[in-house]
Image 1: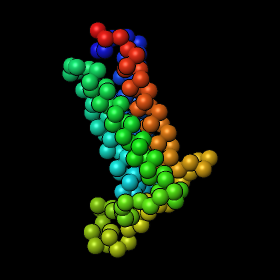
Image 2: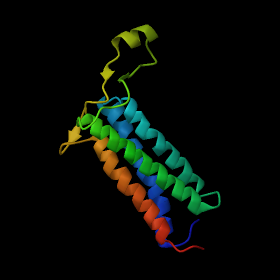
Image 3: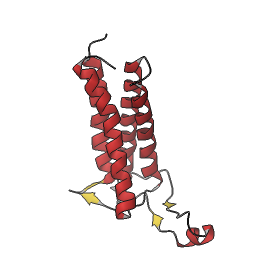
Length: 157
């Protein structure tokens, strides 16, 4: 266990924030049918890594290193989210094509022919004019910076 309130808070934030954001992404996907595009998946991968790094910080030394890597991974997801939000808002062009959501329980050819097209440059949902990618940018960027700042302020033991 890391020592000091700042380090413990950084550790909890490093595992909790990506878990909550991924949980929200999967609820959006499976509960509300908001299937992810390719860039949405790009934002999820660093969160998976952050959870792994943060989990390692509970059992493997040096704990500060794993927490810092988790914070950096969260920050990377935020930066990808910012790029994706810019594509959705038309500020710049994306670097990827669209992707499709396939159901593994149906014939692959039918799945390809009938799968909904998920565009990377169109926000399927927004809240207060901010898309899901935009919210990920805000939460992940500030969350990742908070993890790293708390860890820097924590006393070394």
